[in-house]
Image 1 (cartoon, helix red, strand yellow):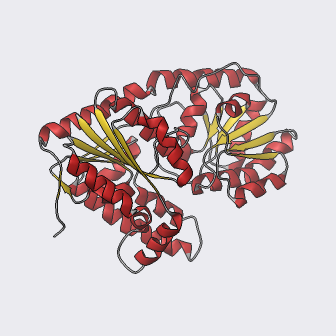
Image 2 (spheres, rainbow, N blue to C red):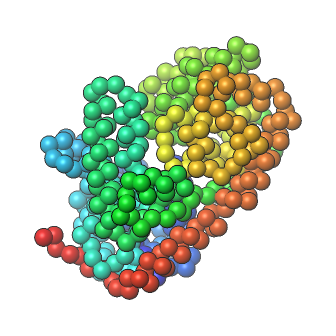
Image 3 (cartoon, rainbow, N blue to C red):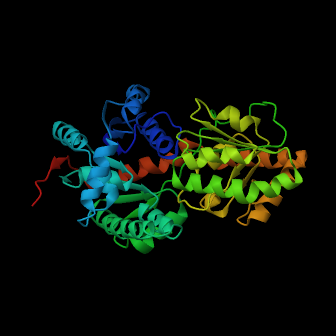
Amino acid sequence: MRILYLCQRVPYPPVRGDKTATYHHIHYLARNHDVAVGCLADGEEDLANVSGIAGLVTSVDAVPLSRWRGRLRMLAALATGTPLTLAYFNEPELRWCIRARIAAGRFDAVVIYSSGMAQFVEESGGVPRIMFFSDLDSLKWQQYAANVGLPMRCLYSREARRLLHYERRVAATFEHSLVCSLRELQDCQRLLPEAQVSCVSNGVDLEYFRPNGQSKRKNSLVFTGVMDYLPNVDGVTWFSHEVLPLIRAQIPGVTFTICGSRPTLRVQRLQRLGGVKVTGSVPDVRPFLAEASVCVVPLRLGRGIQNKLLEAMAMGIPTVSTTVAFAGVEAIRGSDLLVADDAKEFAAHVVRLLGDEKLRARLGQSARATMEKSYCWEARLADLEVTIASVTSRNPSHAVFRTPG
């Protein structure tokens, strides 16, 4: 089959949630199919990453996302019913590239990852479109709105409503929708009643993320993630202010490393607390995970599957997580990881782990075994290929562009 795959960042390297998922989707599909990629680039520097995916696919159309133009488009969208998400990502050059690519080829299917990219093929007809929501962005904005003050609460609530309206339209008009967890599937069935929807979960690269026997730094904690992403910023801020002091009261020498690119000023200021280190961008997160005694995933906001949690567990790092971060992961709390939402309970779990080497080893071994059993990318993505085959067999046609009427 010939498949067009659209995503909002260059799908390489697999170092953040959406890049990890899209890279593995494309890598898997390209083994047996001709895959063309259309994507935005997260700034000019992201264009350099195209070479990492170009050898796998037949073509890559990558267009830098202009942040200032995106913000101007959002300002204009405030006066209309357009979701700000769509306005921000609506780069005209990518729209032209996708039009030309579809006009020149006969695609059997289009896979679109994230709702902001669906706008680029809304006008296409005659080709099955599979919308990979991963999770519903409208619910993220609703969640954000509940956790901020005015005036941002009004803005986030507006975006949640308008994006949900758009997601319903896409789900009703595209041939199939996909999400990444059973929780998201239930949300789609509730909120997008016209959707033909199924679940294709994330996996983890078990060869890349594996225990390596690296020596541990005593009483060291680590968090990994992109550090300008609101759920990550909120999570490490809460942990540093509310949980870490409780841990340090019992283990004064404990350290906390926040490992990830683009740390905001709010995150950088956490280093003033003492014992907190912010690395900024690193070429490889594995050494930081491997040397840590315990990984913490203290997210209070967020949807979908947390790749950072899967990666720590795959490396056999004993992990303490919140329920939000753990949701959707097929693992056993208490055996594969520890879970807590209250600051005192979260701190107690960390203190317990730091003081019990045998428990750390047992938890890490169990976590790795669960990842090996359930989270191999190849097994997870078999359902993606089955879905594409099923949808295309029901719609045996090729792509043309329909003139808006």
